Length: 210
Image 1 (cartoon, rainbow, N blue to C red):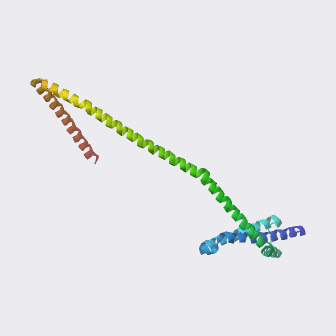
Image 2 (image 1 turned 60 degrees about the vertical axis):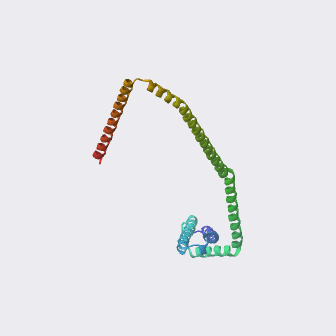
Image 3 (image 1 turned 180 degrees about the horizontal axis):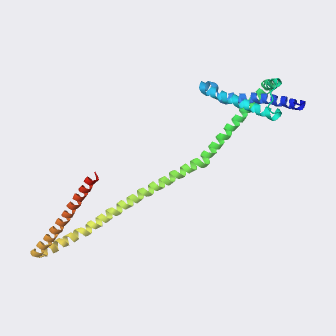
């Protein structure tokens, strides 16, 4: 390993140590350990350390093909210590600023969505439903009124017609009346027989189906 490669490896590992410190603070900020169950904390910690190890090894592989030396661990420790002593306060302030900025942007987008999209669409749906209900009630009232008028007209027309038919019926000869009654009774009997036949056929069909 050449001196330039060793120097580049040292700088990379110092940078990775500082990056590890920043990512650890970020992880602690979002994890909120007191509010989490122990099993969830354990799983999150496991994934966090695996990801950090992979990132460090990937960086080391890009710099010196993954060769491990003792000074690499010292460089990581120096980078982490430098972050803790020099950059931690500034980074935490920057992190909180970014979090508050993201929250503010999210709230703005949410309010804009509610004001410009959700509420107008909801109001439009309510308006359409109100119009449909109003039209339905109006149509029902109109149909009900028309039916009442039709029934009234039918009654007005039917009563005189019945009286006229009754007058003509009374004027008919008795022999003709008897013939008409016989024809009516015969037709009624035929309809009754057809009805009984249909009922019997339906009963047989149900029994065969069972």
